[in-house]
Length: 84
Image (cartoon, rainbow, N blue to C red; front, side, top):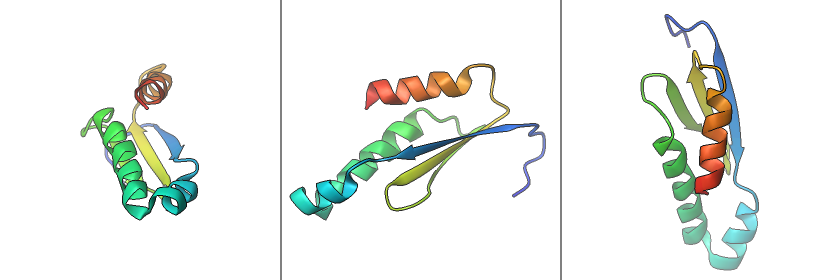
């Protein structure tokens, strides 16, 4: 994909650990809720003009930040970890 006016990007990978254990122990309904909760937190910390959140795999998500400011990725990572 081409995005005009984007000089650099930061890519953050998120992995929901132990999703298989959640699914096997509590059922896929709870696994889906865990995925939805993570997606909601990531979306809450995204800005639609310069950040995008994608499900990358079964329990993995990717956040792409366009033209990040100094320390922005670290701030987002800390905020998401604190909320989770």
